[in-house]
Amino acid sequence: MSRSRRLFLAPAAAAAIALAGAGAALAGTPVSAVFVFNEDGSPAGATVCAFYVEFGAVEGGESGSWALFDSSDATVESGTYEVTSGEVDRHPASGTFSVPNGTYVLAWDDEPQIDRSRGEVEITVECAAATEAPAPTEAPTEGPAQETVAPTAEAGGDVGGATPLPTLPPTSTDSAPRNPGLSGLLVLLGLVLGAVAVVTPRPHRSPR
Image 1 (cartoon, helix red, strand yellow):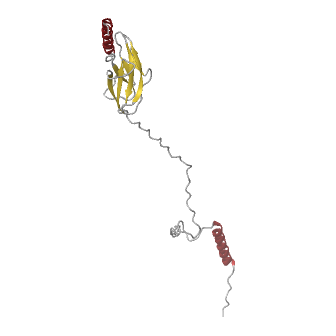
Image 2 (cartoon, rainbow, N blue to C red):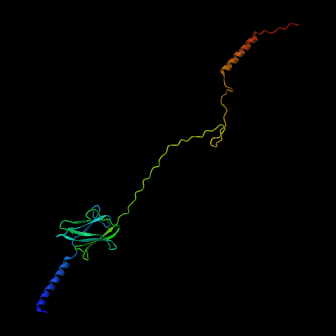
Image 3 (cartoon, helix red, strand yellow):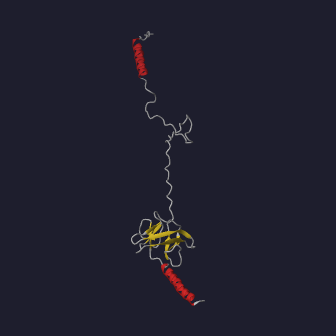
């Protein structure tokens, strides 16, 4: 190999090493931080139910990829983000993530592919079980009032198997009912008989 060829290869190799080093520096850990919020906009605590995330603003801006993994490392959600010096990036853009209860990892990287240089945040989803409202109780429908009719006792019979009470004698002191017409007639008849007795002459007995 000529001397001039060797002199040419040396600067080329050095340039390749320099580019590799620059690429490693550019592919560092992302600067943007991730913030998790509850559905109502309050910061998330130890657990969340429905939630959304925001990638924080970075001086000079930053863009990359993100993914939400479940406990089996399966991808549940994924996308890209882009922030500026004064603007954050919300995901989802509206609404919230609604995933089953469990522990998830949100990973993001300032590269198209998420690798080991990524940032991570663990999110524990714990939603309370839905409580079914009790079925309304229907009030019983009131029917028309039924009139209770007492059984009528027949002459000489029992009412409902009960023994008939004995008939009490009348409490009146008169043994017979009074009849004013009959009494007057009897009085008149007595007067007539008395008058006849007075008028009728008695027979005279002759002396012996």
